Image (cartoon, rainbow, N blue to C red; front, side, top):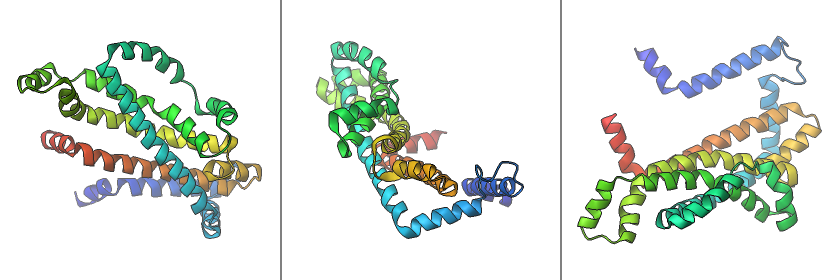
Length: 259
């Protein structure tokens, strides 16, 4: 029982170490050509050299900053649009075809247009990230707001609450858990969007570093940067969960209590 509890507690670390061990064995046995699949020791060496030179911290800092600012802006816009859709059925009906048209556009397809419109720089990244990531918060928010129980709304009216108070004191708090599910998904998309934009039109950041290292055939460093991108996803997920706990801690505590 003690060993099983230990495995459950440290399952993420155990899984990571198992992947590293399997990777190292496959690379050492050369089951895949080493130029495509370097050993973990070479990847760790590439990571360390980039870390010591300072380029990794500088590039990763820029990428994370752009992704965090982008998802924050996209979340505010998405939730604002969801509230507007709840207030105005006309807006909801008119905005639905726009969302259906724009939502499927991949980040890479937006970059050339954004370069022509905005030039290079932060405005380019902000435009691409926001346009790609507003949809999960908006769609989840609009669906959650419209699904609030009529009993809750009628209770609010019996207490003398206005439509505005019902929206912000009853509907929005009830919708926050679903909204944060959308934000959590959008956070992953924001990282993909910023790395793609940096690859295609950037001069710094992880995306630019990935392209530069790939063209220089510095494969261990490419893999190291890929792992850094994965770690960034963990960081973004942690930040969203932290914000979610601050806003909807009551809901999470009730879920754990009655699970």
